[in-house]
Amino acid sequence: MTMFFQVAIDGLLMGMVYALVASGLSLIWGVMDVINFAHGEFLMVAMYVSYWLGFLMKVDPIISWVASGAFCFILGAITYRLIIRQCLGGPALSALLATFGLSMILKNICLNRFSPNYRILTGTLLDGKKILLGDLIFPLPQLVTGLSALAIVFIIFYIIKRTRLGWAIQATAMDKEAAELMGIKTDWIFAFVFGLGGACVGIAGGLMPSYLAVHPEVGGLFSLIAFIAVAMGGFGSIPGALLAAIFIGLIEAFGGFYVAPVFKYVVVFGLYIAVVMFRPKGLFGW
Amino acid sequence: MNITKFKKKDVYWYLFIIVLIIIPLVPFVVNNSFLQHVLILILLFASMSQSWNIIGGYAGQVSFGHSVFFGIGAYGAGMAVVKYGIVPWPGILIGAFTASIVAVIIGYPCFKLKGHYFAIATFAIVEIFNRLFMVWYWVEGALGLDYPLVEVGWKNFIWYNTKIPYYYGVLILFIVIFGIVRWIEKNRFGYYLAAVREDQEAAESIGINSTMVKLAAMAISAFLAALCGAFFVQYNFRVDPPMVMSLSMSMTFVLITILGGAGTILGPLMGALILIPLQEYSRALWGGFGGGMDLIIFGIIIVVVVVRQPRGIMGIISELKNHFQKIKKSDFNLKKTEGGE
Image (cartoon, rainbow over all chains, first blue to last red; front, side):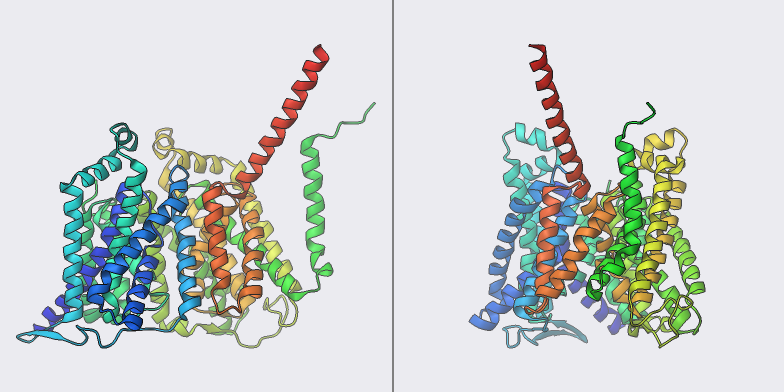
């Protein structure tokens, strides 16, 4: 029974990180109906920012997530200005293909500059520490990352639902032309939303290098999981993405433990296919 | 006088016949084996993308799952040669039919989904197949299948010291696939596909069974993609899951077609003519600069083309055509007004 709860804890902690990555994607998808294929690569870039800050300047990931979040916010806003804005009026998939090109560029710049080696930060503040609760182990780096991820998802949800800026974002998502007539600068809103989506993965990536190795291919799996979490949760629904991501984290952990480690993603993706067969627009979609 | 005037259509026909005569002669002129390799890849990727074009371009269902069918075809040929030590042909056929059946099985649930949901479901399917093939002992898992040395010739479809027969092999494949797509385009079935692409509800209201149409298109498309996969493995002498069943392979199908112009018969060829030489030459020229240089440039070009001209190269061509026609027309109008004075 201890084992069961331990696996559940691991799944939950992973699921919270997936939730932060997925909510960034969900925000972008919900507001502009664009899939950012470079989402995982934003995560990879953020992890590199955090890693190099830690390695060269001895800044702990507990602090440097601010820097990587800000970096990815700017990266997202620039991506919007240079690439996405031109794709918005065009065919449905042009933004997806353009961001695929961007993901290739980012991945290979990192490969070219930093080599494909796996890098991990050692000797950080939280490194190797854990909380013991009876027989259950809570690894502290994962716990801090997971809880911060959850907190940031709630902050973003609050921004969207309760602030003037959030209302402007909602209005833009519902009807761009009408929002423009109301005096909302939709172009700025889009840039901000894309930046915010980038900042979500930026923060997630900034916290992770203390327990997850950085390498140029690290983003691929995260972006796939985020796509699936968002599609499972439903179009542009942040609570949906949150629940789906935690669900995916649990399924992954249980599948890896009770079925076989090699099959854990097969279980996750298979379950996704099963869910969308019955709910074609996701669990919380309409 | 019985001299018929040259019509525009005739010019196109003569051009077509000239091209048909020239293409098989190319290997005799091109002795450089790298150039032959590039030509083979252009034709192979044009055929692959054309098979994707049936479902992605004509039927408008942007599937990112075609590397699964490509991989099944590749494994069909590979298993016949490596595991059973026979000629690849029965394996190719079995692989192609298996790919069709798999396409129908995974197409049936996925066609309920629309837009981005469909795209993401097909991503998931590629990952499932990739991971299953990685651990499937019968197909040697992640080790992949390595070809043994066998007798060269058309019987085994293997040559070691020349690429020219491969060129003819892929040319036949290319012509067959283009012929099938051309036939579909002008057939009743092609109009069904276009109707489903433009408006599924309207198509259903006039009695088209949209699910059946899409499934049939998917099955044909998967069959042809599997044939291309079989050629790929015969040319490479090796197959493993990440090589054929990966998202990047799927993206190659999609990118070539979209860059060339989806839903047009010449689009995949145009896309392959531009992208493949670019990829191969940038790899040859800049591949040495610490790795990844070629892919950075490739990525930049993809972004620029998609942002600047979403309809692809065929879009650029039709724009140019309009431009020249406008010039001609304005020229003509000018003369008329001059004559009037």
